[in-house]
Structures are given as C-alpha cells and as structure tokens.
Image (cartoon, rainbow, N blue to C red):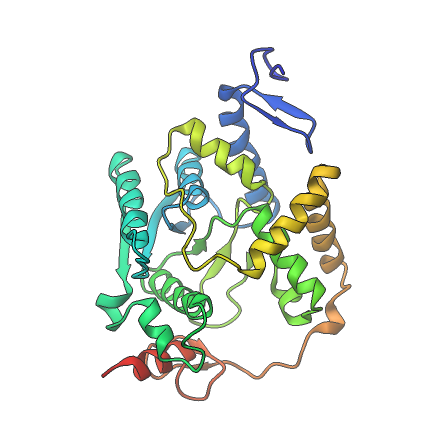
Length: 308
C-alpha cells in the first residue's frame, strides 16, 4: 500500500476514508483535520486558554500533542484516582503524563483525590449504597466535579477531553438502545457553559477512530499506558464497542456515518421533543459548583459521607 500523497510506503490505511498515508503525511493530516473540526464546531480560538484532561492514555496525550503543535495555549490536568489493583494503575498513568509534560516543557496540574478529599475513588465508592459495585459511577462524578472546578478556578476558557469516535459512537449506541432522550440531547462535540460556574467543554478528536489516534501516538513516539482501567472489564461501553466493531468490519465507515447522521438529526430538531422539563440549577454551598440539589452537590455529599 502506497501513500496517496507521495507514493512512499504507507504507514496506515484508513478504509473508511479510502486513504493511505506515509508517516510524514499522516502526522500532518491528523492536526490539519483536528483544526478543521475545531473551526467547524467553533470549539475555541487561538486566544483561548485550554485545559486538557489527561489520563496517561493514548487519546488524551495525543490530543495535548496535537493542540500544542497547532499553537494553542494548552495546559494539562491529571486526576489521581488512587486505583491500584495490584499494579499501580494510577501511579503509572501519572508517570506518563508527567514525562510528556517534562519532555515538552508544558504545565501539568495534578489533583490527587485522596490528598484533596481524604479517600481514593475505590474508598469513596465503598460509602455508597452500591459499594460492592464497580466504582465507575463514582469515578465519573468525581472527575466531572474536579475538572470543572479546576478549569473554573484557573480561568480557562474551555476544558477538552480526548474522547474519540469509538467512545462517542458507543455512548450514542447505548443511549439510543435505551432511548435516553435527555442524554441524546446533551451528547455532541461541544457542551456549552449554560450556567454560571460551568466551563465550556469540547472533544476535538470526536471524528477520529481509536485506531487513528493510536497510530498517531505511536508514530509521534508518545509513551502512554497500555493497560485499561482494571475496573473497566465487563463495562457496557466495551460491549457496545465490540458490537460496533463487528459492523465496522463488514462495512467500513459505519461508526462515522452513525455518529455524524445523529449530529445532523439533532441539529435538525429530531430530538427536541425529548427535552425534559428541568429545574434551575443551584449553587453548591460547599464547593460553589452548579447542582440540581437545593444545598449540596452529589460529589460533596459523597465526600462528606466518607469523612471519618
């Protein structure tokens, strides 16, 4: 297989795009496409201060790399979850984030959940009614609260995450199977800051397949953690990804068509009638972040329960 642009040996063949590229042209193509997606969806401007949520994985570190190559002002945020499971998952993740930041002379903000709130994510999960279940819900709740707080307090214009097309298509698949109208309405590459205290959020990699972000990280020589979170095994999102991968093998481009047609349908108002009546948000008396609760947000209630 030869590169479409120069005729050299291709480093990657993207069947869904009918495009094969060598290393040089692939590493040029990814940032160019990312910039196009940023502009098309008005995610942010060159003057904006950007906070990149990094986990030590390929997608978030690739995103940080792409944005800095494009000239954006992008700092990193790593949240130490305290997940060990016998092989130091969180410690390894932090190592790769710190190494990337040091190698590229970038600023990395580190928030350790145990240091900041007295308990790790697994320990916080033990205080919930479903304490024996996987801590994924507690993890998501905690990360959303911390990411928004750090971005807000640091006066960042936008918080960006490394969600790729496989991630977004799997979430969409699950929401569609269960016809979760409110979730469908909120899903998209940009989530506006529609209440004081909330920070704008964006997903610049939303149109890239996981295979493409992996190839970018490898070709750029970005070191990242290969292990999945030990609590991810058996997650519905992974099952949905497997189902979509089967469809993709038989019909390249299925995931992209599925997701982009969803965005077109939503823009056309197809899901507007699914919008639920929502109560106005209040301000958490503990952390000052928006919440639907009258006094204290769910995260602060969780932390309070876990405090001896």
